Image (cartoon, rainbow, N blue to C red; front, top):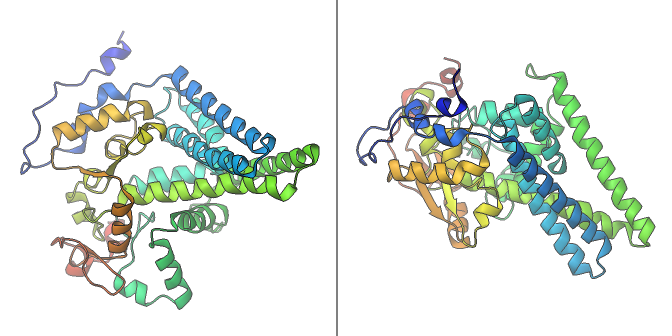
Length: 383
């Protein structure tokens, strides 16, 4: 009988790829990572229990601590832990958390509750669309940049929102409005992709929100505190912090002056988008580890089956074997706002980012696209 260890045996690793050499097929690169895709049930459950204990403990602190600033700090920290729980749910949704598919789905749903994320809708939008077509205009909708013509055609109010989203100050507003609200909670229920499970998952998270709100109101009445204060620090602050956190994380994962977008499927496929469209953002003080290593994002896009507790090793291996192929960026606020100033719109004909006036703000890449080949992006996707 084949042993699990035999199934996870990878071929010997090659020498690091020369900078000018063709990039191997994705299956070859994933083969290097096979030993790192082993999953353990106990570790996944312990991570879930730990983060739920932190979450409930911080909410208790928001209720029981007397100084307003201590309550606020607990609310902000609870928002960060919501992000940690979401990353666990994200792995469950990718079936990379434990070896058991059904357990992954249940852990995913449970971990997604504090972030008010409907599991099945996230599965479709993230796993199928975003990972299946990363940075392909017309399909991948997450932080998809507009062209100059698209931006100019917008009504004034919508242009204002686009400027707000890409200002660097409002990634949470973008995620809350464009992803959570419009694509999940208030989605078009007449769409062909609509399924009954979507409504059930929305009811689940909204029910959790109702219980959460009721618990804060009950705690305020039981302790003689202001209901509005506890609703603010025990619900609104954590949720808003979470929206800001996820909006920021997704933005920096795929927005960089070296990251290209495509509007032609053939050109997109030739660009090996699982490597070229992601950024490995590094942080001091082990902040990346505190975020369950989700910032080791290239490894995640190369192989979604790698659990969060193996991503650091996988990323290190890829950067060793593919030198100069992976975008590695040390985080600083200066870099972040510089990126926000540069990456407003995208010119697919010139293959570069532009400002809102169409002036190039990144190196131009001569990439085949619908702008140069005359092939509509929708037709390319349907082919």
